Image (spheres, rainbow, N blue to C red):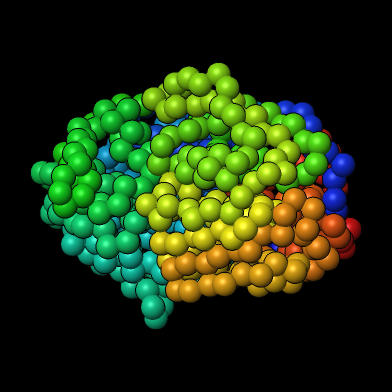
Length: 450
């Protein structure tokens, strides 16, 4: 069962060719942060291009529960009237973050240094995910948390009445953990320092600086050292959300494996901490080009053009690239199935604690469709069958994970036989227009119980 209702089995059939323009939604990471930082500024933050998936809408509701005024003007245009750093009110009800690990972890950080108490829950998938990775560093500020065994939701966070600044080294590469600590540091006196041994997506740092926080980043021998000065007055912003590279991955990868395809995906954020998939695809020999490269709102952006690529080769993906493409490994493994040779993906332990255990979920689904997969605790490899060699014909379990469901829908577009998933309903959390967008390009995706 999906936490959002009845399961929706879906099947994807081979497409003739995918052509046209794919207008993917706004970036999920930036959408969450726009709402949260807007709520912590004083005055009106105007947001255009907000991703209106369930995850982000749950964050918008949460910001209202903490006292900010959030207005949806329609067409992706939103206003947030913030209450200032430390200005959050205590919510009257439980905060339901749905499927969103990013939402719940960032919101916990944002409220952790205010003298208020809030209880968080989510859907069946989110309530299995580890929260101690966030609550442990938040405890250093003086925050208390009470949850289920294993540090899982539902969980009550008691904000620190007299927070102290923190110096924290992030034990695993996680932008969510880093961001939670930085957001908590906003209402702590003095300087909060976060040290990353491995750089992760830096949207929080860029956006905090944009909102007027005093924040510095320095690369040192111990890693990337981020220093935030607490208690700033954040200034409201006008934010145009770039389109999401993680969503762009699906039409791009579908075009590469479907004969005759030529797809343009405009306005994609190419922040270097997020664009690893596209460089990896080029390394494999994909016909993927960046057009009209530019800067928008401090973020690098380009139009991506992807064409059918029958000559892709399996490669060893550099492990140091993992953090910049962690959400894209599922769909990369689908592309690897259509390449020649073996693709090795190492240093990806983080995939085991996403919306699902993504290594396990993809390995099972790929095998069900005739692909040879080997896996270890922090690595997996996919043996390619060549551009015409993927049999398909199997049903994959999505494990309540939107990226698993979409990856297998992409696979069906180039496979010899249709590919199904047991439940496509989680797709709405991040990419609510996935089905009509792909259909417009020429894909054949059907809902099997409708």
